[in-house]
Length: 257
Length: 304
Image 1: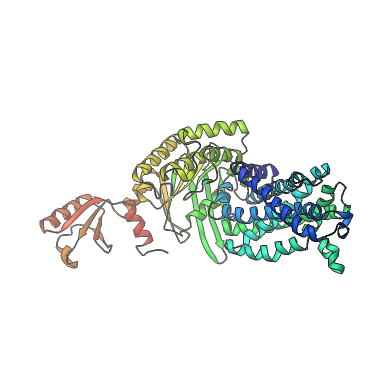
Image 2: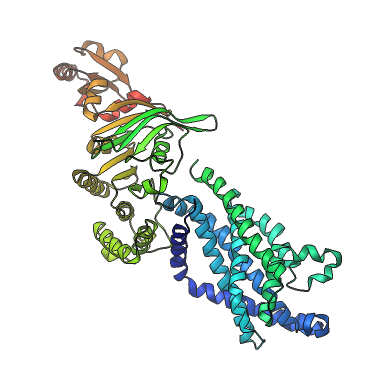
């Protein structure tokens, strides 16, 4: 049985580590979306007319309001690939933790919780940047912390599963190229998914697509439809839980035998 | 008094490979018990079963009265572990290493602060509290790891090669500490292939190879019984040079660069020494050691 209390102790260790590099991390969380929003807003924005986008949004606002979900995804994924692999192998952090009352399953849940928090923080930096450059942001976005966390938790769990199986860092490229990048491009962040015609439904039930459908309305000031909310909650908790369960089985063998 | 560790018929199989094959293990409370064996003998596997990290395949095992496979978290809460090598947290300072470790054991924030302070002092690293482990010397890192293992005031301390790769000063410091902990009544299981260390610290020990227990007992008694009380080491120029000088009953052993004669009778060894010196053969008389026993049991061939 997993004790969330013990998982939180793992999460606490990661937060303590993160505190020492929070400055660099937060600068990245702000600068990266700033560059994307300014450049794409300037370039693509000039080539799109407001009537092309839903609700007559400017391209920059449309794009920015979708970006939260992918930022949550990427931040959590990278933490749970490169960070977790380093902790599992070279730093032997997992080995150290499982010599205490904490079990391997609790370690992995703690990792996913931390990556979820980190992803949610990074995601909420996007509306901050939007405000900085003068785009409208609704206070409802504060509710977005929950769905951003769910997106990040799901992708953290899935990345931990990949980490459990990967022989070395280079193999992460397969996952990034074959899974994360397509989700990013087909998730309705850069343009509305109805461009895909009959395949639009497929794009909108992708885990990232549901995250976009929940987070974008919150930035724009209205509540999301219930379907993507329910979908996101279910896939995040069930899918994330399944990934962590499978990852624990594999890591147990790799770490201990 | 119930033993600290009682294992009967322990088996651990990885696929078709038996890493531990029907081992019986008894560690009494308050003793330092040594597990000796070449690399890959199964020592670490046994330690992991004892520390409730690795489930066993078969056999009975009780550690501090608990079954590791059923009460893992409760048992780990009462055990201290000093693993092989270095698994200190490189991302955290010395103080934070101890503080987070205390938190892993469920200590409250205030209690964890007190633990960290107490252990920094124990490790004599109070002035290095903000240093990261990589800024410390090998000896300091070891001290920090042993201090860390004491965070929960364990009833049983498992040590896996605690002085490997340390300089002589640091080794002696660590031995001094372990001796002190032993004197205070802490039960220890020491995995090592440093015979000097085992002889110095262990009240009893066992020799393991290929997943099986070869011997168990007190170091000196084992050496006396299986090797002898005295050993003569010869550097020979001709192989048959010795025949005229050897006296009494002995067991001869070729090691590659020298010839050993193990004696059960110290007087015979002394007489042989005198005769060898008279014949102009270089010889060195010493006490039979645990290393002689170890090599006798596990062979001299290089392991993988």
